[in-house]
Image 1: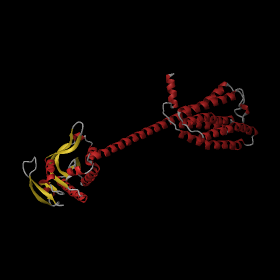
Image 2: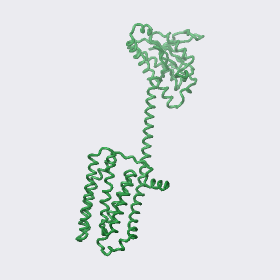
Image 3: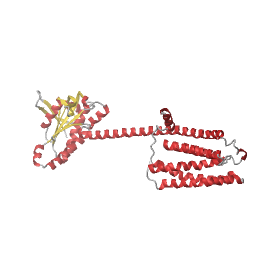
Image 4: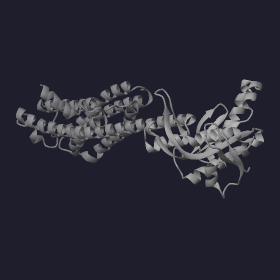
Length: 440
């Protein structure tokens, strides 16, 4: 029984998921609304075309139409209700189960007029109906159509055997006891059953392949939607990250696919320190709202200038800003130094109209750059001589001016005008450092 049940289940395609929506049922109802009147009209027309002037055949056609046309009318009423009144998939499904026996009946009754084209048309309509229902709807509705067709045809054969339905009105010599014998009727019904079964098996195969394709496409769409959602979420995370990490650092992390904790090496970079003059005094004079506006304007202009020239904002320290050139991506010592100096000049040009006085110090040299910090928090930054030198040069710069060290001056000579500022003593450095002041 287990193997037989498994076989029947696979035969019907019961292992294939076939979800149907109210929209699917509604589409089938609309098709029924248009097809049923056309079939009824074809049946009426066939009475005149196929029966000729034979009174006996005309009488049989009239008998057929008396059974057939009310069935088509009832099918039309149910289909119209599905279109205009039904609202749920369950209601549609119930209506489909009502339509199945009526639809089979309207086709099987055509088989009563044996010996004419109507016999074969009726048989063909039943086969088409079983196939269509099985392919379009789920396997349970398909089985219902198949079983209904088999039972109704069995009833018709029984009526023929009992002499209630004349099988061949054009050939009365066949109305014999031998014709109505059990052996003949069983053979006659067997080949009809075989036709229905073959149609159902073929339709189940088509339905299974069709639904498997639908399922595969649904899974693919679901996978694509999931990947798109993941990508959107990733982009949103990156955009949020860019508010806290320099865009160059975020882009480098994404493009190189490296672990941030592994981003660490030694290289030559240029470092810029900028500090807002008189900030300490301002904090005592301004209320928090005014101070916030001042700092926001200041940091906005400094950040814009740094990004315009390809700099990486390392950190904000109170009113001070540290900007790196050459990290995370190196572009060449001379290029880095030139962009660093031009950023400083641009910052002064942006802040002068706002009456902000800024001191800037710049130095170039070999540093260690990468991710540093604790297990709880890390940041991308730089350590080394140029960082300390730039930080020490900045407070020595005149208000609104830029000081650069000797190595930076050598790299930008001929492209940036600068005058000697003299040798300066820097805390933490054993030897004096030659400094140059950039012309504004």
